[in-house]
Image (cartoon, rainbow, N blue to C red; front, side, top):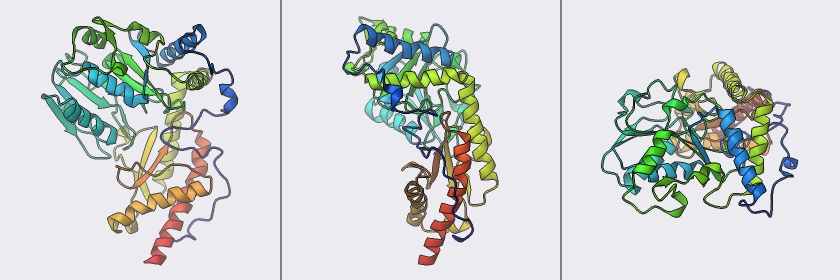
Length: 393
């Protein structure tokens, strides 16, 4: 392949934002969507509480949460929501932590080195693979990501989660919620952030608790001091205010308004089913391109574990695979730089801890047409980088 293998494309994607977080805004978004934000008002005012409560009620309805599940807004994005769950709930019984990419590995570190729990089993696999899910012991608490944002690998379904589990299923679902069906009855703690599938502004996290998780909170006191920002109980009872929009810390009302805008858009196109369908259509478009492209493949080899949001791609051209390791890492960075310069695609280099490759967000706010316009540019950029490096050899 030379740089003449592909002509420079003429058509640009309408929206070049393919970042995996913060992710693209919903189609048609502009700053006027924030015009009614309660700037300068207290989040504890009547209107402030009403907006926060509206985010929770609309989220509950779109997701289809069971009536007895709590949903609350918490600090520090999805990371804050997961940390709150780990610090508040773990230690009552043994813990299994599943990891197959960077964020899951981060939860391993927190459980083993920060909380320093003694009875921990780590069940790991490499990028592009899932660990053996049957190894999870449901007499224990189990911590896992539903979708590995930095590997493009998801769990295929919830069949492996025991309905009669004794422990809690604690699920980081930040790039899965609103894009993949989640079996709520199989999950006890679910976390996500507005900045992923709904394309909201970063900063805030969502924490969802099953009745079993609430029971744990009200009947178990961790051995370690609990920072104020993590406290979900008072006097041995759940702080119900958190799940009515009475946030622990001060939220940005601009971010709240943006979240409401995204939720209203989701409702306008048909709710959760349409969001999932849009993500699936985007993955199908990428799959068709990959199947007809000789230099690239999915990092996740098995089709049933491929993410429909954070799509991670490997470069499989024999020329590339023969490069020294440091040279391989430069190729996707150069592609990313070229396409950003051309205003074609922003922030599509793979995650820093992942194998060298590309990562393209394909969640519901992405239009399939924009992906289809991106593919010729990817071919052109790769051919250009290859030609440049071959000439320099």
